[in-house]
Image 1 (cartoon, helix red, strand yellow):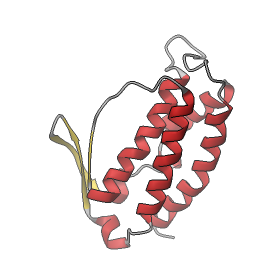
Image 2 (tube, rainbow, N blue to C red; image 1 turned 90 degrees about the vertical axis):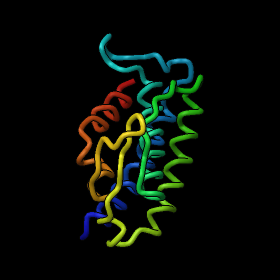
Image 3 (tube, helix red, strand yellow; image 1 turned 180 degrees about the vertical axis):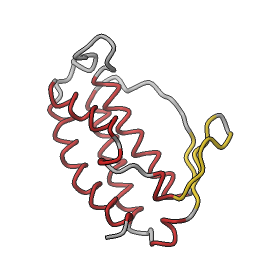
Image 4 (spheres, helix red, strand yellow; image 1 turned 30 degrees about the horizontal axis):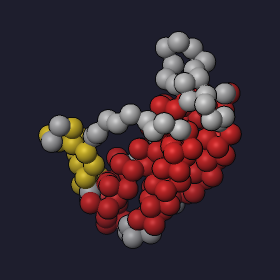
Length: 142
């Protein structure tokens, strides 16, 4: 199995699971955190949604720009953004072949290239993202 196929499988498996976890979070508890130094649930949910948006940009144009935005007022809005971005990513992945997977992509911060690598190396799979596995575990204990 190619890394592209592996990524597609991981996305297909991860999205429904995370949607269930995110939808299980009670509204009004977006500030919940298991430890004072932990990020609040609402920020983690928004991070997961925006990571998928960045992945869509990378797949679509070969470029993503770092932008930081505050999470929406409700967890429901973050969940909706996650679902919307997941669907968009799945649709864009259908257009990617092995040659596009190896093409150089760029991640920009402040308009400057911060990272340049083949697209397949930039898109994180669940098994290569310990931070998000940790976040998923955190969300599951809320």
